[in-house]
Image (cartoon, rainbow, N blue to C red; front, side):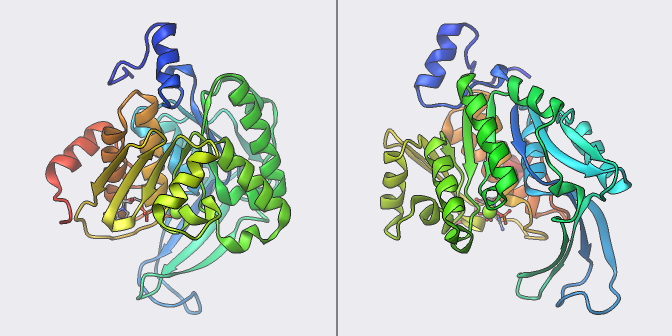
Length: 344
Ligand code: ATP
Ligand code: MG
């Protein structure tokens, strides 16, 4: 994949890109993430719970880190994931999709004894969701940094961290090890704080989450997560300023159907109105937004252009049933942007 805005052919240019506050260029090595791969099986009809026979649709490839990395690769970013699936069709649904879309799955381990993780999902009439999860007793929870995982970390150029992972001590350990290695190799780091306040009650989780925030070049919070990440309850501007004081260099704030805003540590700000689309299935919007934004920035795009693609990636994904079924290529997102009105 060529680099749209010519992010650094020579070493000098490469250094300039980093000093300007950008993420490490794509050619420095893949964006990687660590976490759960799942299948999602969805109730066809809205309603409450799973207490009677239902028409179900799926399995769809899923898991927040998987959705993120799939969108990153579809957009043309180099990408890889460290995860574990079972030796079953639910695992193959995922590895086949990720492979088709260009994700390096060399560090996706196949556990011989445990099934692939799953989430049964049913939307309630008000848009909230009921779940039946099989994650903690599935292959998804049997993550470890084996040889292939360490090899992927060694060649990575960027680490993307899901904040929720800090609630699982073993995964937090792996993320911290990956973060140290990737930093030492000159790579960059993004964090999707998707962390609820309640999960931060455990002292260690809060401390590790806070360290990850301070280590991030880029934060991708959604709504209230901005304040959870900043650790303050002030205005949006105060929360943003507090995060820049801690070393963060850019923030892409997700605003659901209202679009998104980018803030730069240099005082820059870009607002992007949401696309006017019918919301068929909101699952995965935030992860597609993140995967697209990180890929675009690493491919050398300026923040405004990257934000536009990220905004389009999130919006396009909500128009399709299934958590990553709407992830778009650059050409698909260009077509979507050209054909879709923005909300006033
Ligand atoms: P998730 O539900 O996956 O956790 P999130 O809460 O992290 O998502 P959202 O703000 O819901 O993030 O969505 C991410 C981005 O996707 C938004 O900033 C916007 O660009 C786009 N998006 C999400 N929902 C819609 C919608 N209904 N219409 C248009 N764009 C949307
Ligand atoms: Mg979110």
